[in-house]
Length: 317
Image 1 (cartoon, helix red, strand yellow):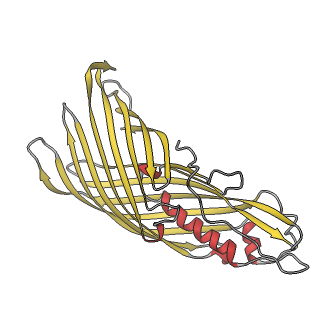
Image 2 (tube, rainbow, N blue to C red; image 1 turned 45 degrees about the vertical axis):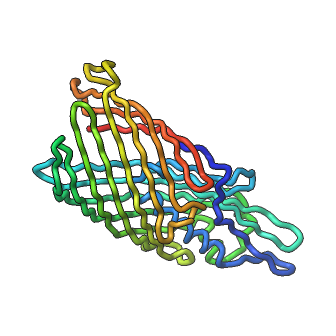
């Protein structure tokens, strides 16, 4: 898991403004927060090593915390049937704090906003080139779709606002935001699988528009767009004569970089994230189990004023 980054700030801080002699709110603030959450959903839409498990705060006890977790995978069915299928599930939690004040006293009202997304994709591999080592270069257009939901829940303070009938407050206490997304990706993928080494290089551009729908609370209906450009590199090779499970143990080296574009650019205080990883892989294909390979990779992630580390577990079937 990537640990909190003390030098990174999440800038979506809510403030309920006041008027003399009574509690009052700025009705735009919760809407702006919810628009931000819809935008943050976009970080869990695409397969992305750099943001697969991300936790952010600003290093103070008053910070608004953001956590993003993602898992998924993709594969081409076969050379004879070059249909590519992928799926990703993501979860994020955002804990904003709203301040309610009558001019002399103020009270913090922490909320807990949880979102869950599921993304699917179907594509086709167009073979471009095979080199003399057997490595294959393919062009892979992918059609993607997403469904997501975000629920809001007040952890304390509902008694303070129970007399409020404002739609924004109604959303804060048990509101919901449902979203769907339609878009696509274009990937160039080079793969070399051989006895001395395996090499995988992917360059991917992705674009999707997210829209609210269904029983979304009226106060927070909206849309967001997600665009990014990413590159991923991985090399696997045997570690000398070391064998386990009747197969050579392989070391794994990987690198990744994601450049966020459009509305995502600067959303979390950075425009891009990079990752470097080192680990090992066990091959269990000689045994009657459905898992053929298992990889454990330690990663270091960094970006503008942002850094952290993580451990990733991957399996091949």
